[in-house]
Length: 82
Image (cartoon, rainbow, N blue to C red; front, side):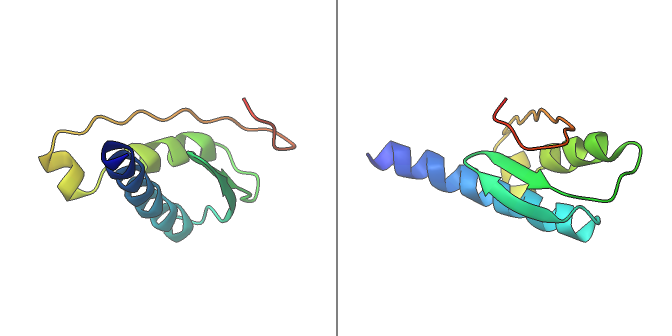
């Protein structure tokens, strides 16, 4: 149980950091689902790749601990679980 709390708490901290960066970059977050950020920006070329880079841009404390994060992004008309 303790390990689960540590992992989930760390994942939440990384998502929170990415969410703030996404909002600051003009990618408004509509909602989150577990480990997903759902944004609804104006249509513009390259925004999915921009969000991927934001999600993979780790805070200093995660880099110091050698975390490795990869993100998958998708563009769609309506939300669906991939």
